[in-house]
Image (cartoon, rainbow, N blue to C red; front, side, top):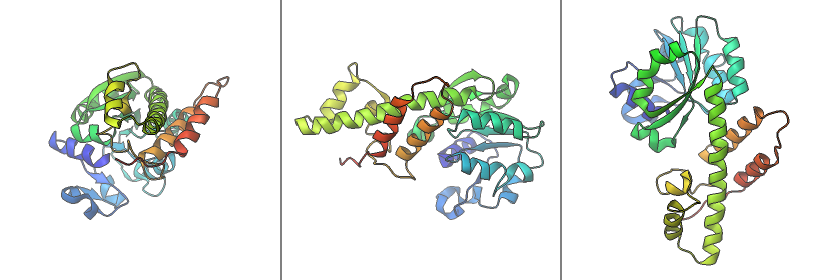
Length: 259
């Protein structure tokens, strides 16, 4: 996700650069804009957009192995666009120095939306700071929802992804059952898209890069499992958690689907 977002920012005229643990050469024509040297990346950095996978990687970027917060002396805004536990976001705000604003800006739309610059952002944080950085989001996305104070954007995102994960698990189950019944995949997907079963995965099945994937730690099915767990981490104390746990089990048992 980070590479097409970087490209969008550059095309919009922003002096954006990337930091990644991988070698810059792996990023093709963006190689000259990406470094794995956190010190060099942090020089003159004022706004950080973090789009790593999970809480441990976010910890590394901000305070751990990369320690951008400690190295970037001019940093004034941290934007977290990963989908993480809302509780982590609230604790991160407390750990940052008072001169650094934290904005939670998780995004939806997957790789295809990042490449098309049509991401949806769920935003939480100071309205004043959000007004200031809105041009960054305009460069990368098409739809923006300001949900409230810091943490509200992330809370909205994990609830959205809880729903998206259920769509993924059930759409794949339905397609497997359709195979057994002798129904053509494309015919059924077209029917679903025009009927009451319509959902994001079924409607974009041929475009969504993970639509046919099975579970793997490094793919988007694994990320959906992480997202459901993030929602569980912020669930109401009296909530019935049986359905989200069943959803995790279903996702963990997904097998790759052949074309």
